[in-house]
Amino acid sequence: MNAEATPYGAAVSFKTIGCRLNQAETAMLRALLAEAGCRIVRVHQPCDIAIVHGCAVTRNAERDTLRAVRQARRAHPAAFVVLAGCPVEALAPDAFERAGADLLLDQNAKFSVVAELRQRGVLPPTRCPQHPVAPLFENTRALLKVQDGCDFRCAYCIVPAARGPARSRPLDAILRDARRLADRGHREIVLTGANLGCYAHGTANLLDLLAAVEQIPGIDRIRLSSIEISTVERPVIDFMARSAKLCPFLHLPLQSGDDQVLRAMGRRYSPAQYQDVVRYAVEKIPLLGLGADILVGFPAESEEAFAATCRLVRELPFSNLHVFPYSTRPGTAAARLPDAVQPREKKRRAQLLVRLGREKRETFAQRFVGREVRVLLERVDDHGSAAGWTGEYLPARVRRPRTKPGDIVAFTPSRTDGDVLLE
Image (tube, rainbow, N blue to C red; front, side, top):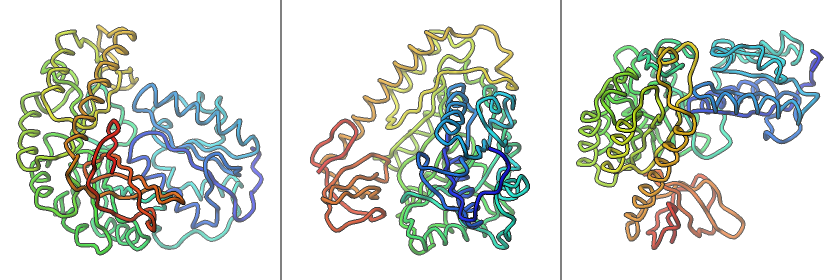
């Protein structure tokens, strides 16, 4: 697109790829553009500006980001296409320019998107917002960024290079955003960050933040995105066990069930330590939803090492597995390691764990048949058929006439369909 200013009220679409932190940041970008007078439209609707908020954590995420830029250019040939986020930090810019991006915004520049677009003549030079804006979401659940960056430097991970060192938002700024989200009707808040367990600002840590958010009227559920072992997982578990608002779901990244592989990855725990934390959590919260990330095919992951991961997954009560085949990230320590596992073998191992994860998830769902659960509704059709999520992060479908998205309803499942709870 040539740099000819779009009219006031320009239509802007967003495509987000990657983690919950990316989704939370997209909500802030959406709010900044809306405050500047733009209209936010769905990704497939005609637009003047198309923003792709990309991800570079895996090769697949990188490919998805490139595909999204090409799709935006094809679908909106006259639009100004912006690529923002981690890929701009981690990858060569010419690839995204060839795909059709008109503007690349790195992690620091992306929150100056309005000024960047005005500088290039894409938006008219109207007055900038003079006050902080709260994230703007299109769904019932609101993701609230509380922390960014990471100092752990795991061997496979590009996040420290892409997002920088760990840093936390001030407690009062987070609470201000949480109150505004509650005022807009968001009854569930998801706290997210690049390394959430490392939240620390002044004397406040994650436990202080949880206690403060729990006191905000209108917020009925709080959810955590992910907690690393070796941070504050046990105090969080204790808080969860006594809290009426913190959802009984923990996502504890595992990556591997083998000691040697975890050491090569630069992880800060052993399989035995991970098991101890899970056992501690389940003793406190017997019906805990438990998620994990697992990285298969890391360099030198032998068949024996993979078998150890499978054994650990079978032993522990996981309900939600995210399985990723390893892909080399230039700029990481693992990129220099020998003995790469062949792509076909990575795929086989990933498929095996995905199947195992699905079986465990369905088994977990069956434990709730005959037990009352509370569901945050996300969709309600004209006939009263509603769908949403339990606090344990299980999908549910109910018939509830005269309800709306954002309502929380209680029901007792009589059966399951795969992992979905049904009346």
